[in-house]
Length: 339
Image 1: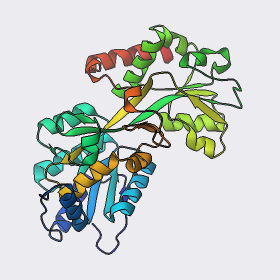
Image 2: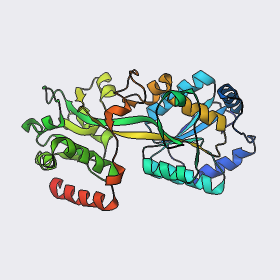
Image 3: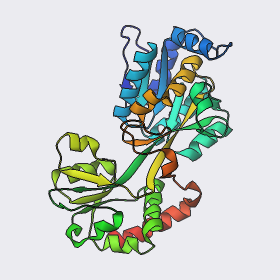
Image 4: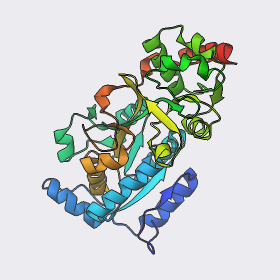
């Protein structure tokens, strides 16, 4: 929204009030826009005239920045990335809808139930474009698959020079006291542990706890501990390609069915830049868009460089099983085992 600098800005966290204040300040400078008629070419031309587009997303910062750069290079349209966790972004989307002071054009979230609720409440419009005609990505009429963050197992090759083929291999005595596991502070972690027991049996948790593992709050701290040699193995970490390129002594592997958090997109119904919003959503699903946004992740397309499989090769989060009672019960069970 800064008219003196045409560059992509990445905003990690903004308060709702400051966000809406920014929208109000800029609203008078930008004419109202409607979705162009006359087909896809007309939408592309109208998007270029709009000149900018804003995406709210909880995807990785590096992937978002790379995607924005690729989109800007392709179309000459400025992309403003507002990156945050979903509990921060959802209230912004709701506040903008309620006040009518919309900033976001596209919202991407890994929380499918929230996206479905937004769709049911008419927050979104149906996407258009050639990629949507080509791919089977729709989850209902408005929300759509984009990519999926894959979390898996990894190990420090200096501390464990062997090969880890499966999560079961982390029960090797060599990993006792040197294994990193996530604390199940949310339903997502609970689903991950349910995935593990679904593969290796209900007693896998007890066996894992018997390894006297180190507990980490998430994937990044565990990956850092793995690279530094603080631990010899870890679960719930991303494919360690960046760490390998940086020279860290780490390796990683996958089960036949990977666990992943799928990201779902929606185009805001009263988007300030409705044509650019449609174009950006379509570009996310192209090979060039996927190469940027789905790097280290599972893609909606096969054989995209830098990705790890397609969405049909991953296990999606089972939200129906994650009732508040089920999550609390599991957390209590986990604490008894691991604390």
